[in-house]
Each structure stands twice: as C-alpha cells, then as structure tokens.
Length: 290
Length: 290
Image (cartoon, rainbow over all chains, first blue to last red; front, side):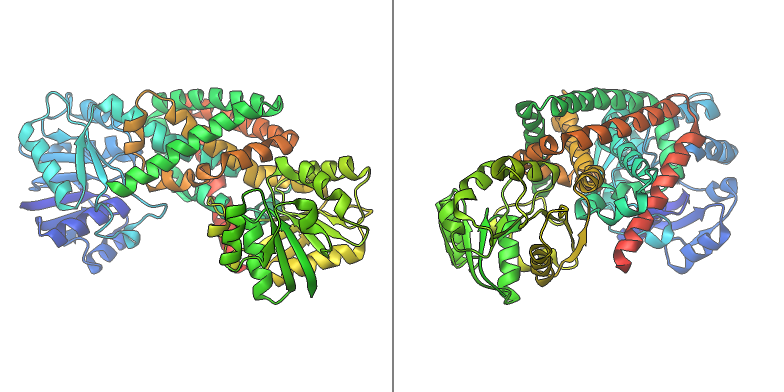
C-alpha cells in the first residue's frame, strides 16, 4: 500500500487514477495539485482526492509516489518545480502520451534521469477531459506501457507496475523510442488526420451545408477531433520526429491510392480497401478476445 | 400507396427500405431481385419482401416503382437488363452514393435520361451489409438527397419523395454535381483516409504489435474501414473526379500541418486543431438539435 500519493494534474487521467486507487484501497492518502483551485476543491468534493495544494513542491513533500498527469508541455516546468522537494526515495512516474520528451525533460531538470523515475503511458482516455469526466473504471483492462531505462531501479519499476495493476490495467514494458513510434502510428497520426480532415471541410465555402450531409460514419471518424487541441499540439510537438515520419509514410501511401483512383485502377483500389478491412476486422476480433 | 414496388438488390439499404415501406403500409407488394437466390429466400422468410425473381426484367414487369439498390458498378448492367421491361409509366429511382455516374449510366442505356428516373441517395448505412443487417428504422430522421434533372417529371419526383418520407426520412433536392462534391467531402474522403490509414499500419513490419496498442479512439476512427471494399471501390471510381479533387485539397492541407509540426510551430498546429474541434463540436450540437 502506498502511504502518500501526489497527483499533479487532477484531470481525466489523474482523477481517474486517484479514484481507481482509492477504490482498490491502494493508497492511504491522495494529494492533488493543479493551477485552478476551484477544480481542486471540486475534486475533494467528488472524493477524488483527500486534499490539495496548488504549489507542486508542497504537494509532493513527503509523498512516496508522485504521478505527473499534466500535458506534455508542462512536464519540464513541473519537474523543475518539484525537484527541490523530492529526495532519492521518491518514486516519480508520468502519464504522457510521448515518452522521449519526458525522459529528456527529466534529464534536463535533474542532470541525469533519476533511477526512481519510471516513465509511463496509460492507453486510455476519452475525447472529454477534466476531473468531472474522471471515473474509476477508465483503466480496467486497458494497457499501460512503462518505458523504464537501464538505470531505472527495479523496486521503483515494480511499485509503478503494481499501482497500475491496482487500477485494473495490464502493464507492459517497452523501450522509449519504440513506444513513441508505435503510438505515433496508432494514436498520434489518427488524431492529426481527424483534425486535418475536419479543418479542411470547415474551411470550404460550403461548410455549413457540407456538415449538414455528414452521417454517422463521419461522426465516428471525427470523434477524436473533439479532443483537447492544446493537449494534442503538445503531443505532436513532443513526438514530432515519429509523427512526421508516420505522416510521410501515410502521405506516400495515400498518394498511391489517389493515383489508382484517378487512373481507374479498380484492382489496386480494391486491394488496399480489402487489406485494410481484413486488418481492421482482425483488430476488433482480437480486442474482444483479450 | 404504391401497388407494386420492385427492389433490385435486397441488401442493407434495399432491405431496410422494403421493411420501412411495408411497416408504413406504403406498398401493397414488394418484389425483390438479386443474384443469390438463397439470400432472396431468406428475405422472404424475414418478411422483408413478398416474393422474388432472380431475373431483373421479370422482377420489374408491371411494377409502379423500381428501386435500384445495387452497388454503383452494377447500375448500368442492371438498367440495361430492365430496359426492355419498363415503360413510360415506370418510375425508377436508385440509392447510389454518387449520382453523376448513375445519371450517365441511364443516359447510356436509354439514349436520354428517362423523365421518370429520379436519382436518389439516402445518407444512411452502417459498416455492415446484407439483408440480415437490414432494419425498418434505418432511414428514420436521416436525410435522403434527390438529384432530379430539368427533364425529370414532377409527378415522379413527388412519388419518390413521398416514398422516402414514408420510410421516415427528410428529403432534400440537390444538383447532381453538387451532391457528388458534398459527398466526396463528408463521406468518400473519410472512407479513403480510414482505409489508407489501416492499410499503412497493416503493412508495417510490427503490425501485430502496433494494433495491440490501439485504443478506443482508433476503433472509432477506423470503423468505416470495415465497410464493404467492393462497394467503396465502386464509389471511389464512380465519383473519382470529386474524390481526387478532395484528396488533393486535403493532402495539401495535411502537408502544411506536417510542416508546422516539423518546424515546431505550436501556434499553427493549435490553430488547425482548435478550428477543427470547434467545427466538429458544432456539427454534433446541430445534429442533436435537428
């Protein structure tokens, strides 16, 4: 059991983790930290956290585990703010959607990545955000990827794994760079495409009329374009090398498909569509089985 | 009330229309036609149609209204097959997702587009298909776009509008070319992007692993990539001019976004993402209001 857990950023992810751990009886005390005091008060009212402090250094003082659940662009300033208040026994983890940039931020702040810093990423979320949207079941049967470094302490790694397992997640380990490539493919690229598509349509003259004739497929396809723009800007910039590389790969494939459509090459078009359908149907079947 | 309605192609759309019209008491008799006799027998068992004929000319003989609910690539051969069996009183309509190609097919078969041919397109569907997936409510509060030509007879137009209203749809009129541009933007482009994305990922070496870390956002984003590949090949080829034009517009916008990410221009990235979120949230609110 963790005696004192500090969560910096009590939004959808931080709030849901706090709820899950409290429900599992995995933490004696959860301290929240954030910039908006009214939201922190609300988090206490909702029973998500036990108490709060708007000052990160005070919030983490004496904590056994610190969870950074802030946008990627805030990771370095927050690490800098808590650095004087943590000691060699404090386990630090984060929930950032890109890992290379967080590891670099930790190295920049501490000189070297602290052995008790365990980078992490829960593959969970909705297009909503904020503590009001948080719920204890968010991580149930979801995957959490940890990307420990060679210098990461085994005991710290074990504690963070245990913490996510208490929240109902399945924890896997992965190398930092590999995590960033895989997530660029399955998460960051789809978000960029959804935002780009809606923006292309929104900038067409007939936009009001165009959206009028959009159907259910469009609503599903663009759901992720309702995600928090600032959060996704941060993710794209933090993981820009892998995102740009995936965008280039996708754009080249798309150009080939466009040319096949233009030259009326039905066989080439059908080949791409069929292969995609097979892969997508398989993905859904596997997801149900697991 | 329509005395005899012939539906060529008793799949998701044709089957759902038959169910809706029978439930509304809008048709005395519904005759189905298709190539697979076992599916037609099943459609009779399910009460979707009253009887069937696998020969299109026999199926439409004596029908007041003929609905072509076959893939776009089949429109011309089916029109050719029924041409000898229809007369100047037969109203013909279709459900194709592109309208220019169907109008061109009718002109090719009949020499000129028959005044009683009313091109139509219900903006409804799921990624499933086949008569087993059909249901009477599919068109409830959905839009159906009719694209009558200057030479289309008013009475035929009225009958087809009435028929879709009986099925619960809201019917609007649009010019053929405009329909094809609007649908290229809101439906055909998203399908091409979803297929292309899944195919790009499926062709990466680590594909099994990559899909393992895909989350709910990816499932929603790629749902339309589980649609029937042959149907969508037909749609892309039938509407290729508008689809290629939209693909070019989108690809240029995407290239701009890619460059903004690469040069770490957070303001430019956030501008696109925010504008998209605003448009998408507005689209969802309007959809709920209507």
